[in-house]
Image 1 (cartoon, helix red, strand yellow):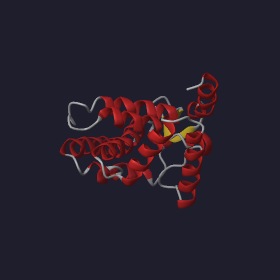
Image 2 (spheres, rainbow, N blue to C red):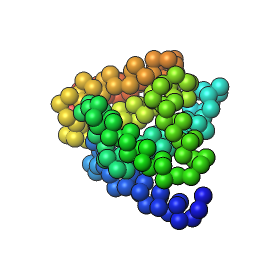
Image 3 (cartoon, rainbow, N blue to C red):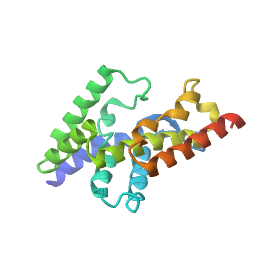
Length: 187
């Protein structure tokens, strides 16, 4: 990749460090999109022993690129995201990927298609971890940052995406218990 193209692309995705998510950190600060992607990637890295037949390198790539479009659109919480928002994010992602030379552009486009289809073990694992990272973030944040709808949402969000794996079902249940305890204590 030509150095100038690399710098131009990095200048755009730098916004992922600036754009905040709906989630808050344990210290009461808004979480950036980049912080979410980083921890999601760490989660995926720690799954290699649990999913030995899954291409964890591919899952890591999915984790790192999945929110590229949000460098342009910003983050919209899943419970507020409309079809129009989804389309805007897809357009933004396409714009970003067009900045990259081959083979990166084609590879990343293929990964986005795979994530959207949710048919491969890698896409399924990515989606489940993405959902659960959000729950973990909410469980760590002060409960005063939760919206009223999140009390119920945090108890169930990601359960469907984790259903394909016994390991992930147990992990999701642990997170549900953490959420319920946080709600009970009003922390």
